[in-house]
Length: 314
Image (cartoon, rainbow, N blue to C red; front, side, top):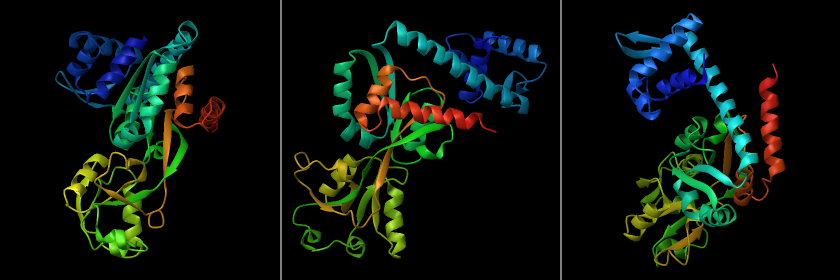
């Protein structure tokens, strides 16, 4: 048994049980992977996969147990490599951040700028997706850190920490009737077509919750996955927009006006997430602190330690 065989098992499952795709991802041949898996099955005395001819069609029950152990071993092996790199090349390496459009577009630019200035030898990558996608990227090892508002705290294998709170606002074209209202209400908003986020993004659940609580059915004319699209269609006169307050920039959004809506919608909390038992390079701690100054290295390290202890308790 060796780590490469375990890596093959993991990659086959990651690639939807397609050995050819796993072979391409790992720069090897399909016959070699099949041979190595057979040798591992013979050594362990069990079938890891269910086969139909030469095709892998499912993973067996003992195979699933092996996969879980394999992933932990591969994770620990990667941690060992990270420890070596930390002390050999402390200021160089790779860091991949998985996040949503709103964070990447409006919050992260100054953080990225500072980080690159501080660590010019670190190759920084940004992956964008919905909260579920970015959580899975961290769990699969495709990204090191996830930043989002929704979903991250739902994953038991992630350590999540709150970063900051934000609110929704309403955006309208200049001279819109809502600008004349002394106090904005949900009933008044519901009189107009609404352009807002798709359900999976940027606190959309809080918007729905507010209308449901007062038994008002909003007229959702269009949904989008990012604020720029929402603002574009509001400018075109398709409706009024409900979006993250952090996504409205007066200097850039000169053809729109923002109306405060903090009293209408509950606040949202953006969180940062790291895979449990992950060894974090020094520059990863620094990136997190640049993004959320309260999340110092000591705070993050303590949270990671406590998550490890909780896993060990019966």
